[in-house]
Image (cartoon, rainbow, N blue to C red; front, side, top):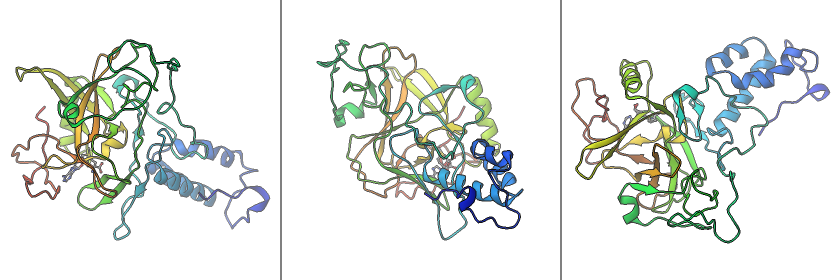
Length: 335
Ligand SMILES: C[S@@+](CC[C@H](N)C(=O)[O-])C[C@H]1O[C@@H](n2cnc3c(N)ncnc32)[C@H](O)[C@@H]1O
């Protein structure tokens, strides 16, 4: 990764400020990562040094959408044919957040953003000989899920109410993203999440994180999104059903402004290559929505799932999933 030359090594061009002399420039490395792309462009237009620093921050943002918060970086790959944006700007959430807890800003593109937070670290270490929390399926090690388990669409894992830590084999979805992914630009669908390695069937891919909303707030936001203020929204409504078929729980997760890389998963009318699984654990009131590979997924294949049933709507957006069973229209939540 290119680094800014500093002090005496740097040959200063006309109009360029010496970062060791101007305290404002010295602090720019700290301040610029907090800016959104428009603010960054505005700062870049003021002097050559800030322009150079802004380019570096853009490069760092492009190289990892997760800001090093996951074990593996997830890079953006633009299109060389057209002028695609270098990256999509959003705030990163490793787990679900209440909308009242959502940050307004977050640094992205700092030089030292290489600390891995949360994802792989164990809150609590499991005991040497089994974690002993007494939950069914609990114990140290790894396990993969069988097709039958995933098709049910509901999974029970150990959680904060158990005595075990993240080493427990019954916390498959709580260790962050462990498969190589990338975010690729497409003219018709904007950003798409792709596999950057072979992902075997049954492998956990990622959780869908974002702001947890009340149904009232979800309806308000959906109307605003439908009104066109955002080119692509990512508000997902999850319903848990009783055996009778009646919905018993509705969870609204909005990843439009705050989320993780799952916000870039597009819709496919044929169901795509991901299973959505609701994961419950003791100590957590609400389930988490997690994606697993529904079949072996090749490197460079786009990851997709079905957003739901398409309803013919006069203002429905055109679907470009390319599946032979494509309905032509993107499903949209009737809020
Ligand atoms: C959850 S986001 C997915 C990521 C999105 N492509 C982006 O660039 O941020 C949902 C939005 O992606 C676009 N999208 C998803 N699936 C699509 C499809 N099959 N055809 C066309 N657009 C799609 C729509 O704009 C939709 O509102």
